[in-house]
Image 1 (cartoon, rainbow, N blue to C red):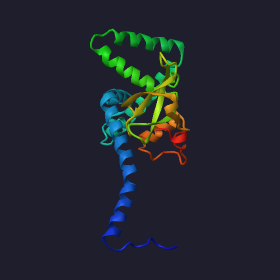
Image 2: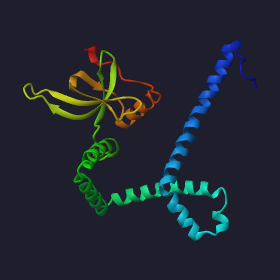
Image 3: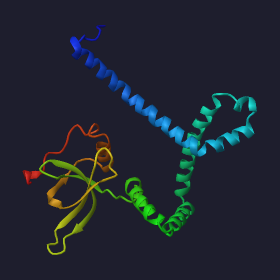
Image 4: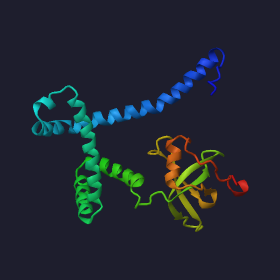
Length: 223
């Protein structure tokens, strides 16, 4: 078994440093996000979890120095369980009716309704698979002559000519929550050959999760 080739000089040390950095970054980001999530849920649910634990467990256990870390993790577990339970309830008719009551309540609160409507529309667009807000992925020339990935949100008809137009959302990367809305003729786009889910993976990974094979440029290269 041969060892690693030793790059000479400062360039070799820099190469080793970058390799080590690329190994550490995914682990560090994952640990940071997990720590942030635990801290956030601990601020929300920690007091409740500690109160229940103090009633169920002896003081010899709750008084230990590491018990605070346990309650922080339990707070995150409790939040995940609550969200799963809420999703199950929302899958049934009575749950859907309850959610409609919540919508009705927030929509009729002055000042709050504007924020709630905006957030609700964004969540429905990105998270509701039944809404089918993003029908398919296409490429279009935007803003110049380079192909750009977009998501078809609606198909409309031009009034006078009757030709088919597409309402296309071109997201920013790596955050697809914002972007540009383009109304283009259907023949000015071409199929991307990937599903909307794969398209979002491609955007959020800044291209790292791009397919190995991409469709050719627009037929006849009509720009």
